[in-house]
Length: 150
Ligand code: DAT
Ligand code: MG
Image 1 (tube, rainbow, N blue to C red):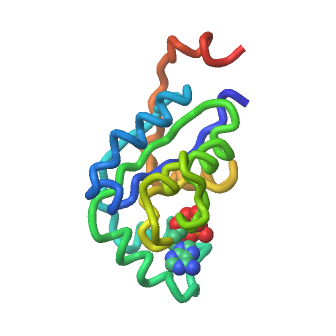
Image 2: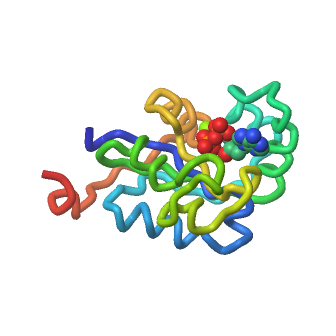
Image 3: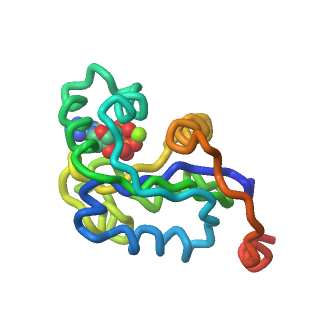
């Protein structure tokens, strides 16, 4: 499905470490279409909603504190198999288990500082896109589409 969408976020450590351009470049280069983008310093309440499935985990309070410590880059990328491919580009949750060549495998060591987020299912992607972009995404023609998809 060429129109599958995923929510990708550069976390506060990725922003501070100057990795925004590199991460965006990987999704652009792969052929995904950017349909929403903003820099936002999220509130703990907003982040608790984003991570509501993890409420009760021992690392949850630390996760919210880390995610609220600075701005994040919130993005929606669209393209073939965007959710699964996006996750593959991020690498494993624990960067020590992430292959070199993935974002976490190239730039991170600690699970609690793993620099990026990607939706884990199409259903969660749609939920996350609504949560971070209640204003909606941007519609435009991607002139390269014919060179990326059959
Ligand atoms: P992912 O971000 O790969 O989807 P997740 O949804 O299971 O992973 O967890 C969300 C974030 O919570 C993850 O990126 C980092 C943090 N986290 C997960 N497991 C953790 C753990 N055991 N210790 C510390 N932080 C953890
Ligand atoms: Mg997750």
